[in-house]
Image 1: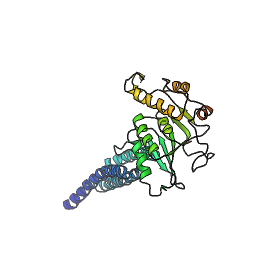
Image 2 (image 1 turned 90 degrees about the vertical axis):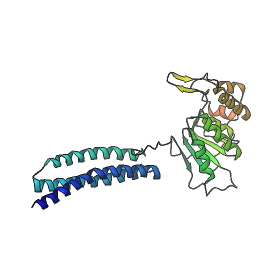
Image 3 (image 1 turned 135 degrees about the vertical axis):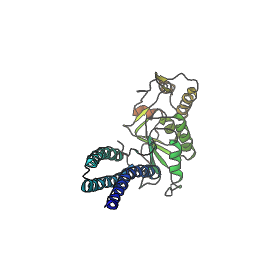
Image 4 (image 1 turned 90 degrees about the horizontal axis):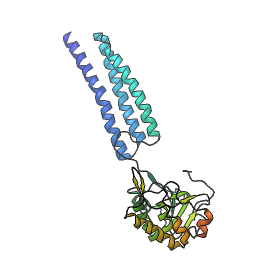
Length: 292
């Protein structure tokens, strides 16, 4: 009799251990899936499956303890754990739907680079120019197996700007490979450096193009006076001069207003020589892109 009771006790202890270890293992497996496969939904599913198995072992331990020892406290623990799991799973599943990372320290970039499935020479940069964004675009284009190097490359931009250093790197690539630049939605701040770098510039008549002086983000507000910022302002001015804009246009582009800046009309963009293409290279001008 004692050996039977000892066996039941060991089984309960083993099940309780599994009920703790399975969710922990699920956490680390989910983190690995997020890190290696960039799949928040896959990570959430792995964690949910292993945590559910952990809950099942907890309920099984409760069943044995209740039947053989009339011990009912594990039932309350199992119910509370189930409620916590359901609340956490709802939160994590909702985040996974929006591609948020919960289990790893991976920081999702604020930009994306896409290649058109029907037109391999058509690419899109969508988001913020942050560290690594220029190299991401360059790698995406140069590593494409479907690219036809006999035909020009078109790069669509949709960005509120970001780090001018990244825009300069991408601008040099655009110049070297004679990339056509297209703007359907918006191209503001540092993004304009990439637009101006191209010899072929298409802007949709309803797109937003915004210029302003370079600034540093500080707790007290933007700082336009740092000495090293002059380099970026002078670069923008030289690029505007290269495409043939007037002195008045160049002066207006230096406005120290990071919120609204200087947004010229489409007619001004055409008259100033910034827009010199009136049809997209591969895609239709009338079909709105997915991000609008």
